[in-house]
Length: 407
Image (cartoon, rainbow, N blue to C red; front, top):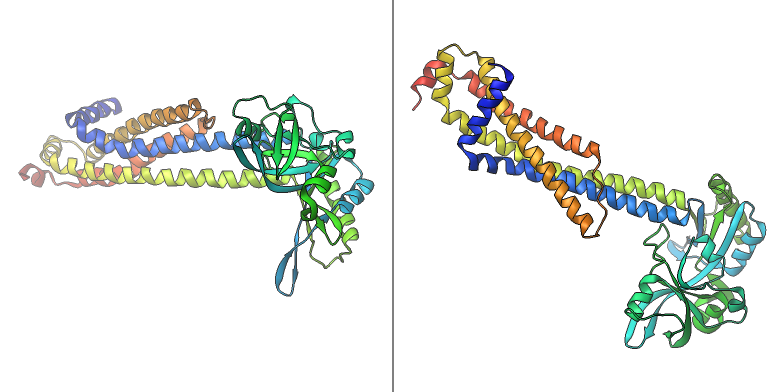
């Protein structure tokens, strides 16, 4: 009996018990659909966040306060405005640089109140973070010099506060101080160093003198939350980071053996770490979905064992008229593989439908890759072969005399 004839026999055998065949395939369908859908959603989410991170610029660098140990306790260190000036005066191969001083504060307009990160910064911050404005203008040096009570809102902040109203020129209250809205940022989503959609930006001098007060002063010195900068080129990032450490060690009086009381991060380093995390997470989700395939395979093996028992007399008759053990084994193995492959193809369709639904709902732009489909299909075939061998070999080992006598 050739391969096509065996496939026809397998399909006829499966068609005899349609409901049982469908229920048997259900485990494979669910497993393959889960693999395809989860991998597609994971790939889409990774691509979306990667685009957001890269949108800020691969040559972006941030300096944050670190921690240091005293008497067995971890103490939060401080960055100061003097640190920013030192870096600004001595760093080379830096295109633009800006400090920020930030606090989580309440912003109120009418009856709407939101808790937002309020950042005092300089005009260069727009270039460092590659910001675009949907309305109005950004902060200026005259705003900073005049300690103007003006604010630029992130897109999400503006939406939550004004609920469809035009924010431009309106007066909001930040921690009981009134500010005029002069601009609204374009939506950018999350980035490597946080989302700029849920912020409020004010002039740095305004922050120090009118809003933050003693919360931004330590031992009589103005502190900053971070220093952001953009290296001249992506190739200069590592060199700039080395120079930052050298300058900051000197500024803070740290010896070579001392722990750093500051941290330096690059956007590239964050992107590489994020890629590793998402790749691991996607594979983990795929492995969990793969367990469903194994469960489905066990279900197929159980049903095929039942099928062998039900068709014992048929097997005995085939052997009595000259069918070889390899022929019987191949017949049942093909039935198992056909069952798995039909379930696998159906599962791919269901998984594609789930991914399409997620994309259509604008939750994540799911991305189905060819290797995901190939992997899911091959795994379904492997499950059919692996879990079909035992029932097939059991059928092939039956004695024709005992099989014919079976009731």
